[in-house]
Amino acid sequence: MKIISRKLSLSVAVTAAASVILAGCGGGDAATAPGGAAGSKENVTLKMLVPNNVEEFPAGSDINNNEIASAIREKTGFNVQWELLPKDSEAVRQKLNVIMASGEAPDIIIINDRQTFGSFVQQGLLTPLDDLLNDVGKDIKAMVTPEQLRTSTAEDGKVYAVRSLTFNIASRGLLARKDLLDELGIQEPKTQDEFYEALRTIKAKKPDTVPYSANLAQGLSSLQVIQSMFYPPVDYLQKNGKVVYPAVEPEAKQFLTFANKLFTEGLLDKESVVNKIDNLKEKFVSGKVAMSTVGWSDAKAIDDAIKTKNPNAKMIYMEPPTGSNGAFGLYKAPSLVRYIVIPKSSKHAKEAIQFLNKAANKEIIDFISFGFEGKHFEKKDGKVVPTPEAQKIRFAVYYNMFDTVEHGMQRLQIKGWIPYFVPLTKYAKYEDVLELVSPIEAVDKKAKELFDLRDEYFLKMITGALPLSAFDEYVAKWKKAGGEDVVKAMNDVYNGKK
Image 1: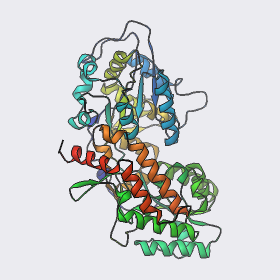
Image 2 (image 1 turned 90 degrees about the vertical axis):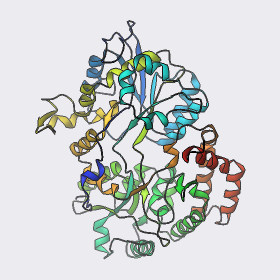
Image 3 (image 1 turned 90 degrees about the horizontal axis):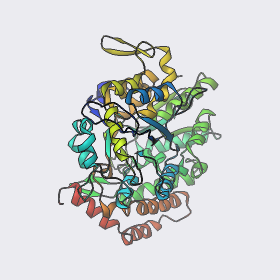
Image 4 (image 1 turned 180 degrees about the vertical axis):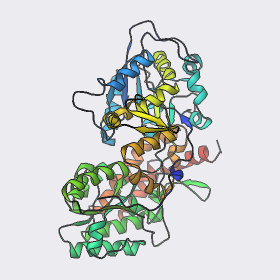
């Protein structure tokens, strides 16, 4: 089967091939890199903690024992030992908090989460990088954009991270079993009413199939398409010239009312509250689910698995329905995503920046994306053409420190993700203001508390554990917890009042 996508030029997703940074750490006896200083003469082992991904290692290899890791050590002269974070986002936060509290954190960590970065800044757990970058990070500084510096600079005027730019502007969309919809004579729903009627038809004609499922055990993001029919599904939104918190706006109560209706009528999977992404994948593959909000990388995994069980099944990313109030559009990831930080407990901060400075070399950037020329790829007309051997180094993404948009899109093409990723870029409209601002003490100290409060109340109101009238109680608690002060602080920074 094949993902069915609307026509969308690849050029929409590739708006610029600007080089940007995503840093690792290292140490050891190394030669001088262009624009940087020589590595330490001591035999230093540096530890690097990096995000997990969808790719697995071939048999007989692991994150520290493979040709990519070995070549990075050889090319940079630094002895780096990598460790993978968990895949689950909440497990990532928990592990990072435990590691940082232990005082024995690795020498460098790549963080994907603005909330976690801000919290570590406010707790004084990170090393300021200004002097190190001036001393041994000249190649890094030459690549850093003003935006990268601004969003990693705290209120004390110091830089606490090296940020990376990404091609991944779209994250999730409305994934559906197209063959099932066709069997039932259901057209792709374009409006909120049509979406509701489509779910009702599926339940009536396919009682063993849940019309819409979600993995709410991992947060509310799998309801993003439903949220988007009422308000932009982001944490903080720029609206009419000011920052607002959509979760306390009247539209949020309307969303909760609709989601509760779906849950009560059995149109939203009752098991959603305990589902994780692996449960959701299995339900799609076994034919027990018709629709959900799913990320592009997970969509490919679902599609690949279905092909082995049901050759006649077809998956499709549908256009998100427009709400009755005209709301339309999904979350758009910012071009800057990751934070590369050095914990204050690291004894090798200088070596970490020295390694990063070496990793900024174009040869290493190209190598991590594509492997060895002649073995993993050939160059034809200036383009990278993968060989069959390229499929054996898919895990190279774990070592991605510096990147370009162009490289990212080429990797998607090589790995077969383009049909899943590109359709989503058309509907990615709304950026989260929280991801666009520098660390703010008033925001960062309250972020987790406010998000946890929202998720707790929303989940209970959706499932009926609390009445919808509890929304007013939730808003009152949000205000009491300092929610309005957070919004004001966001406005002061984002809208130039501070």
